[in-house]
Image (tube, rainbow, N blue to C red; front, side):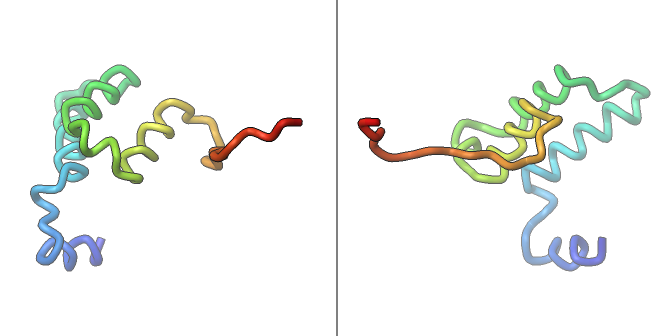
Length: 84
């Protein structure tokens, strides 16, 4: 918490999209509603634009949303296929 308060001066956390998404989620909870997977997906799409989906942390949020029960180890294979 302390590092977030210190970083707020330097990182402009009030305008960060992660902060805005957390605020929207807090508003939903304060209204007595539940955060369902469909609401979470809506929050993701309302908060982030297509350029944001190129960022690694946003991609990680999407992957966690798509497979919430994973151990968060993802394997990506790139390169030419082998003839075998």
